[in-house]
Image (cartoon, rainbow, N blue to C red; front, side, top):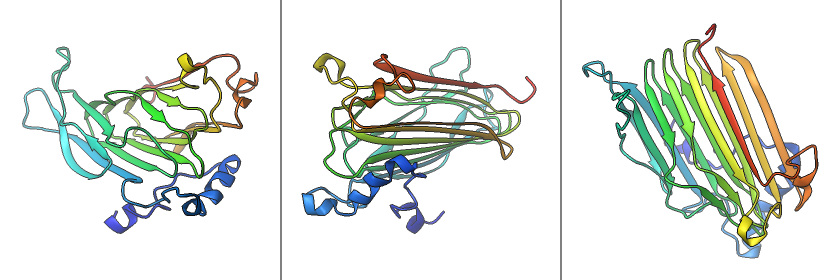
Length: 250
């Protein structure tokens, strides 16, 4: 992938559910409202990270084999903190932007090579701020190779009143790969009484193995208070998604 493609805001925007198309149309006119448009400095963050196994290491240590990072995205050097598996890498992904604002585009591509073992997480949760125009997106793609183990455990997203978020997570697994993933949503700053006052939430998960789909799940809530429908978030202020995919045939 060339740098020109990586930095193209269109290429960094995930597939948009029809319920969200209006928010992306008004993003084109955001500059008239004093809102920074998509593609301005600080509005597009990119992380393209590949982890592989050091064959010379006695503990088969997983480390960084390639990387491309564009601010506000950052990641820490791998840490090795599990005494039961000293070769497993713990990588903290973070943004220096203080959360997601209108028209932000965050693109993460994380690849685990054959035999790699890693936990990818964040130092803290992500606040999603009030938006007057447009929409914020996070698009995460995980590729997990043969006999690799990926634990993807980011902190919670907290939806402020008036916020808009579309988050898409794509996972491609090899036959012998293992995935453990969890994603938590707070429907508002609960101590401030902001529950379900966000403008829009889209959460999409797609998992495939060897080109065959295993899971396609999409949640779309548009309109303040609409999440309380029994068909959507109901009365629960905190929602978590946990996915465990063992190797094929396990």
